Length: 91
Image (tube, rainbow, N blue to C red; front, side, top):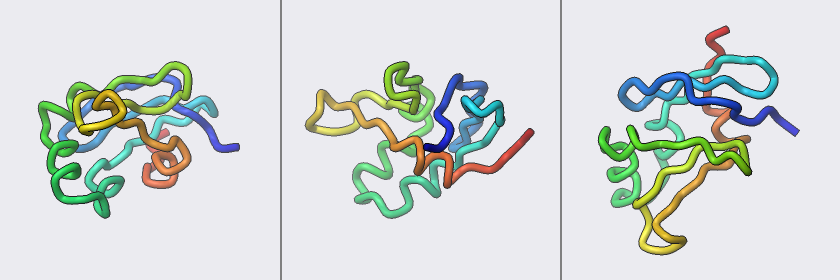
């Protein structure tokens, strides 16, 4: 099992820096994470106001954005393994 997100440290544009349960600080570039999503959903997620509302899903130890989808109460959470794979180590 890969590491999970412990804390959101900062949000800068489409990049979110997080502390992971293995002690890493990694930056996730959301433009890469959602590159293959349908355009309507991708554009909404990459809207800086929407992306700026990202939260830590305490239960799953991953990132959650509300009010994006028309189903699932509008929430979208991201597979932490995908986020880890699409992140770069900072320290």
